[in-house]
Image 1 (cartoon, rainbow over the protein chains, first blue to last red):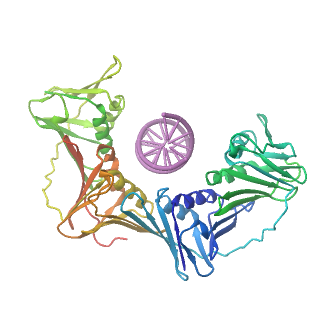
Image 2 (cartoon, chains in turn brown, orange, purple, cyan; image 1 turned 90 degrees about the vertical axis):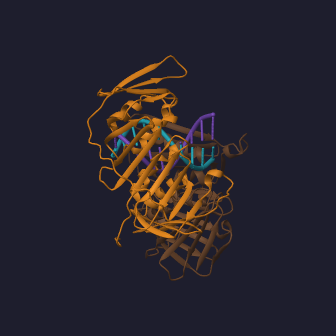
Image 3 (tube, rainbow over the protein chains, first blue to last red; image 1 turned 135 degrees about the horizontal axis):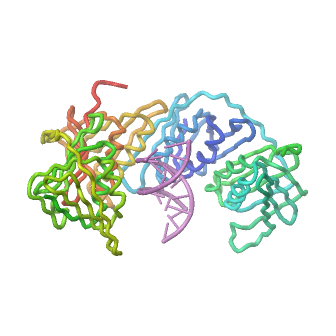
Length: 259
Length: 259
DNA sequence: AGGCTGGCAT
DNA sequence: ATGCCAGCCT
């Protein structure tokens, strides 16, 4: 049995937005420590892993492992009916086929109750190796979003080069080419705008830009993002939810010299 | 002869928006006491009745009964040319076939004059019996709009149940079900947000939700709406225009146990 | 007050 | 399916 209360529906609404375009249906794995999700994207190129720790809820209770098979589009329709600052409570029985959700308005005596039908989904639990990356860049998430959107107009690939001095995103396409460089600068005026680089070794890798743009749907969830790079290993784009979990995206590099 | 001046064109613009999708053409019945309209919607399922009293104008003059046959889409096109806070003056001759409209900008010396061709339309004056309803619920109009939109995602029907304790809107569909409950509460912080229930008898009725969503086009006209319910009688959704009239929608319940 | 997102209409 | 307008959120 799961029963969990979230003081602001916004968190779950945003989490859903951050994954729904990548994944159409998957299991939310609920247990004592929180709610987790892992899935390959529909075209099996990227991987999303999300965790929402029990601390994010108040209260949170889940006695045993409970996988909830959810169609994300349908969950999205229902969450659209919650206002951002509603109090959200979710419940599921151990052997039920329903996720029930209650939204309570703080201002008024309005209570909304929705039941979402659950589905049986084969859990493909994906072992993600714990890697030490050659380069870890922590930067402003909205900056990262801007850069991806900007370069997208030029090409469908970006090359990310990281050295001790900074990180450079570059694209080359029909209409011309573009590059955006951020210097490593731990101490900038606006705290959120610092670009911090921890480097074992310089790297240069190329990725499909449309996936990166897609990952930036998580931008509203965290002011900072970290890009974790190692040659020939999938890029990890990591959004930490202040104390309550994360959304992580993995994307294999483009290999060879495809145009 | 009709001659009437409205200090803010916005009122007429909004009224038109509130009916134009339901009705394509109908008579505006003008007389000494104001301007009224009654019509079945195009599919003859719902009925709209609108009244704009002479007090809403300044000045207002209409000597005798004058039915103005109007194509609402065309009137809409012309009203789009009026800014919300223009002064609007309408005129029609007793035996003319034209409605002339003048929009005067308050800020500038701009005067716009439009003539709309009138048409002959058979007046189907619909006797609407004056009913005493089992339940009359007065609530925030924008709240009502939200609820209809939210539930629309789940089904094309809503069931409205009203008891002394509150009013409950519920829908059941493919992806799950939903219910929104408002407790009766005469004294909430925000005046407009109170839900007031006058009950003779509890009722539970089911309606086509798309009509309700359509009715909520009147939301900008009034902060409050009243839902008037009696078993087996059409629902009356009533938006009162502060002292100057109303927009009322009638909708027959769905009968039997259609899915 | 401005930007962004969602809804409605064409 | 696209463009425009309104409401909500930051």
